[in-house]
Image 1: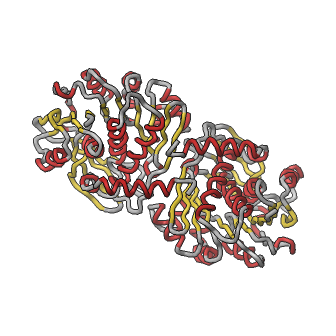
Image 2: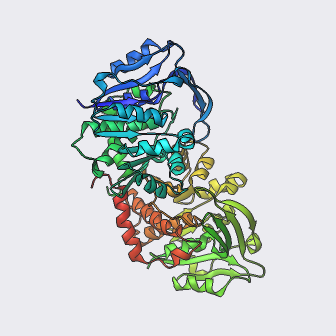
Image 3: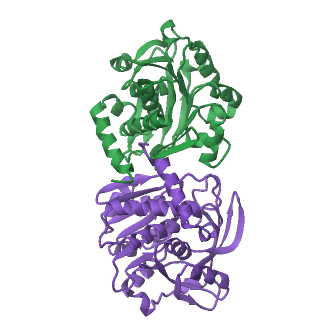
Length: 304
Length: 304
């Protein structure tokens, strides 16, 4: 089985949406990514948690065969994010971010992690992303996400790590900000010129834009009738996307395979938003993914 | 050749976008619709202009074989809208609306218009939409657009005319408002239950959602690298959509044909946004539409 390493946040979230409120539930980019990617691949996590991290949350990841050898447990509290969504739920509003043990996070890769061929550098400090990347010795494919905070505060570090990675996965607003254009298509072309072989822009309910080999591939998300909580959809997308690429890897990034990978990410993310936190994703069966894939094809197919 | 009647605004617009400013240029829903639909069908316009309406603007429509017998010229000035777009240009901001001669518009259909089988009731007072509909004697297919102002002020009139028409074409924000749901999919299902056989939600750069026969069809817009002015994109979409349906009409609304019609509308609208007002659309050739259709298929096709 292929192996993927992910470095990112492991968190407890308190989330309010028009559909309700959930307090101190499991979250963080590394967790969403891991559960999604575990459908395709064997995942290894690099991250940090505090003494309050619950045994059941460890068990959830273990039940998905996720390796937690690189998850450090240190004195203090686990990273906590509180936020809410309004209206169409397209954007999270932050109430409070408590970095806690994440503040002094220094990732150290266990020996068994260093030769892993696939890596996802989730949304964290680009200097830490570079540090993790440099500890790896045999990378075949690296994906990276980032956010406004790093675009504003560490643009140069970000541009350096972008020269190393193969795929940039980024939200649309952040793509426009990083690529310095109000036009998403223009911004993507600029981002592609900085190094990554492929750029994937995540658009929430509007789906995604893939750009590789100077070609665009654009599709909407699966139409979900009851969006409960959009948190983690982007990291779920990345997990499905890189999970699929790692499972089907044949040595190079083909546009046609990237298209399939985007659809896998998109489908998995459509389940994540159907419940708070990981509640929907952790109980998801592959048969449900396949059924939705068939439904999705009907929704997007021009001829039939 | 099939015939379509359109009733809507005929206007002069003053538009500012990040790409520049255009003053007193030809606009209005009936004009955008007419030029777009004229690629497929013979169009008849019902509308009103003032004494300031320019001969060259009459000639433009005539050059597209658009019949202006139902375009009244009355004392006073032509409807004038001034607005601007910022950032991603997804929403127009109104600076000023001068209704002028449009304020007391009472549409009277010439005899030759009454038996036209296809009609588009563009975004105007729903009572006027009903009045026009009632003057027609042989409608095969009616489409309707509306906007926030009428949703707020004339919801009951709107629901009445919605029971008459076959297709509702509406912007996404307005679909949510009219259907009273923050979830577009839920809103569309509700709107569909009020009468129209099909609902088409226009999403700007994110494309469209078609709902008919209890099935969804969703695609993005063609990726345009230089959006100059989004004004009129929705009415252009409607023109391509109803134009295509009128041209290929076989007596009933099939989901598969509605899909094709949406793509036609979407393609034509992608040209409109490439210039101020009607500048791009009026010089558009059918060969350009076909070439873009081929490009679009590459952008949205999952397998190839």
